[in-house]
Image (tube, rainbow, N blue to C red; front, side, top):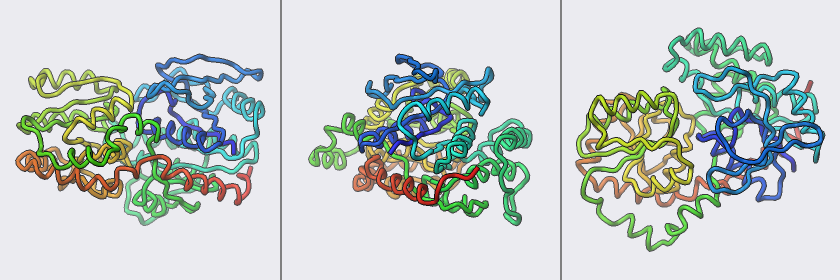
Length: 436
């Protein structure tokens, strides 16, 4: 099978959506399928660039995680402006359409189009599936409504702008009445409903988000398929930890003396709440924090650390690979997850894979973390600080949480979920090509 994956994030860039994309494409290739990724240019990436006979811009880059080749990548022309987070924006222009069509006709026929996002590249995926009469699978995994409502400086204007721009290219149904939601939230949901209505199958990463999709008007069949982590990556990082004796020792040894060692991994942006993570350390004694990632709040984070004189307790490591994050998790006592708007959270899957206990604040994420987590009573910093103090006072709870995670450590492996995704592709094919 030849699958065309469309994403608004280049696989060379770092983030949860990108690691999920890399794991899915690697799993498909290892199972004997062909994968072509359509995405914006990478903001900073290496790798050799080539162009095929059609002129389509195709990259065969080096994977920043482990140095192995990632699937063929067709870079779509980005606009001269970028998203608020600095990432490139692709619009479904004529030039983008020509690049996609050239790639679709240059090699082996595409069997399924799978859109992983709902922005410009996601719209381009819908249009490509329609032009070429191909089945379309749409992954929905972003909480734009919550992100805009809570973290945009002008929520209504942001939601309206996104709705008008998106609706110009891909109209769709309205949000059902009677949900008790405001106009900003209704506007933010419209793009997701438009993508769902255009698809043959919808994929959600978690049951709680699938329920939310149905409640907000998605009528296309929904399949819950978890994201995954590359098996090869986990084998390389956790190879020694596959030994049962080592795992048993790690679970039963008493917690080490000294401050509780916490890690925070993600993009330093408002919706991920990295500044709140730093504030937690300021409010709580006997703990240290290593933050891995970069983003628009990096300078603010540096300033807060300096202002509060936390330089000896909070360390910023900047942009790192997924492999480095996993190694850091293996050496830590606790993952600090301050985000309150994730549908699943790749960092949670990484914590499960490394049997790292988690302090989090969104009860919906208990689905991804069935054991091994401590959920604060609410999302406030003071509630999270209270839970953190309890864990610090009784370090044995950390050991118990780690032990509880051990039976689930293999669940995040991509191989556990690949057959389910392939079944979704086959079901989409049975529904027939996406109508024009």
